[in-house]
Length: 425
Image (tube, one colour):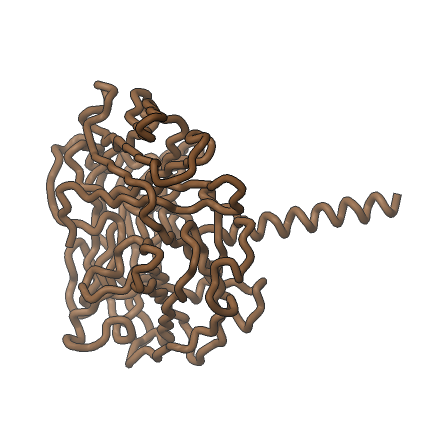
């Protein structure tokens, strides 16, 4: 009996370890004192930090990881790369199969914040080059203890082996033509040794850098083995996204004045409070075109012109409010600022006195996009708050993976970035 109990305890411990590791293969911040985490390709333009973390295998263009630690003294933080398969499970590759050096990197580039009410230390880390394409996780942990993880971020490295084409078209289903956007995909796999296209090739699509509603194209609608062509032009909605609406935004670049969509700003000696205007649902209004960041955010301050916004921007407690009737479905705040609804503070609470749902988020000065949504059956549904229009400007990515015969990993052999009618700040 004692042996059986020990065995059960071992299985439970093993299960807990597997669950913990599975959680570490997603975009997540594990510590409350870690803020403003961003991963993007290095670039000279102002908006480079909102680009998707995707780079060619041999481009020489590094990915840059930025984050703040709300602390007075620096910590020893270490970064490690994890190679994943197309479905974001750890691949069978060993570290030396994709890493040019020992796969443990100390993050030594940091700066102290300058005259900010909430002190923080800003860290910057350029990810090392890898030798294999595919999905990756960068895991950052404290004091070289891999169990003390502070954050994990996904990124992708691709090589152009297959020829991939994609376009945004009206939905095949007539009822969805005014509210949805369909992504048709064509793949020419003649450059690979493909004997079983449906088994060796996997295609994923995502909208505005979100993984929670990414789509897997399981079966092509047309396949020509002689010309090595696959077409994905589904008629059942399998490659269709709700178009949504342009994102709402708040301008937090000022602390001495109210930015756009800010109702009140209170500057205290130790902290800054910001209250957004009380938002209302807009599903019945006509589509209105304006510039947005497609759900991302930019760090910037207008209070100290010419300085470095990464170390001179203030942190403030930003409160979002939306006026609706109390609902049995939970209400969430979506956008990169809440990791697409995964952060704990993304769930809004009902304020019976004001008749609004509200949540407060610690945010660095900048420009923030967001939307509201109900959580219904595990899926976020923003249509009741935001509406959905085919004309909405969105960004799409198509990722084509290939598992060669006898290979131990999925190569990312094709990547397409779609931004029709691009209109972002």
